[in-house]
Length: 143
Image (cartoon, rainbow, N blue to C red; front, side, top):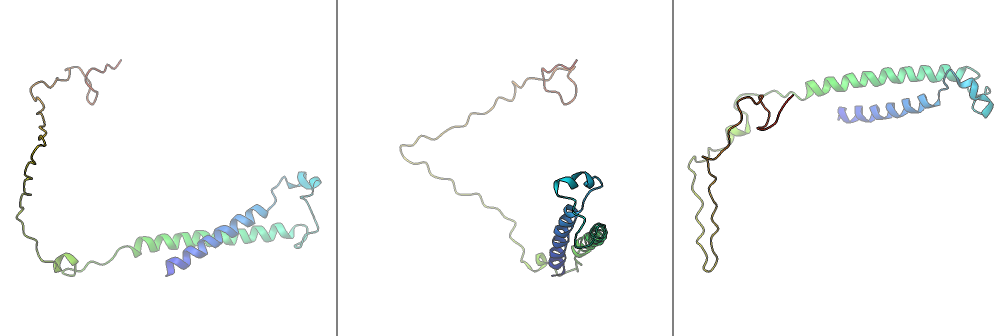
């Protein structure tokens, strides 16, 4: 449950950080003021928006990295379960018999010829040349 809550807060903080970063003006924003993007009469004042947005972004980034560390710690320490002797599910199952039986051979049907599989000749296998480097296929040359 804690993991779910942290994941939801994590995503909301990430979305808020993206929005706040995109709202901030860069250092070269004065060049774009002639095109309507440099309004000085904003809600927060001439420089108040930059201070507010940068401080809010800073605190969201701190929370983002803090939640990242907490979730990493929970993942590492929460996934290790204590194993006690004798409480495994394998200890409660009866042992299976160790004998194996061969499957019954299918009787050949009348009128259908049986396929035969030819044996591969083991004596005619070509040998690799003695001067071939290790791992190189036979016949390949390295210069």
